[in-house]
Length: 112
Length: 112
View: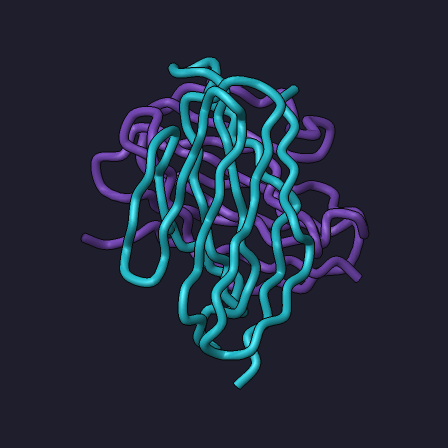
């Protein structure tokens, strides 16, 4: 069974630029999550999708972050414009129902 | 929201030694997972253990839900066990209560 796929693995941008990350969950997993992990901390949930609907985006900085889940499968997370403090690893996870969450390899973003 | 505390924050072991990592949480939970984050940043599921005891090779975990703590045991540690171990919990059961909260992690270094 293929795991959660994410791309790109690394991204370096200047502040005020835009960036987008892509996630493909495990086949059949209806629930998809985006997390932000700042160096030295545990991951923090940004947004949760159930199929193509948003369940929880209470911790998403909506003035600059947006996310969508196309047809209930793939998802993209966008930052526009990026700030220095957005430097982090962005992790995508998926689950079958509301139990075990499986994580992708992450995208490491550096904002200069 | 629910608080998750892990101890110790750092642990250095000699290869072959045993260790116990602890996770305390502030409220009742329906989901608890232990993860190992390897040096490349990948979060690897170790256990889904909202209650009871499980074992997988040299690793085992116990969650005492009524006392709001979980323990991860590593026996006969190897250098490949190095990395950060995270405990993560979910309070609710269902689409509106699936926010997974992570502890700050325990950084384990196993020396040869």
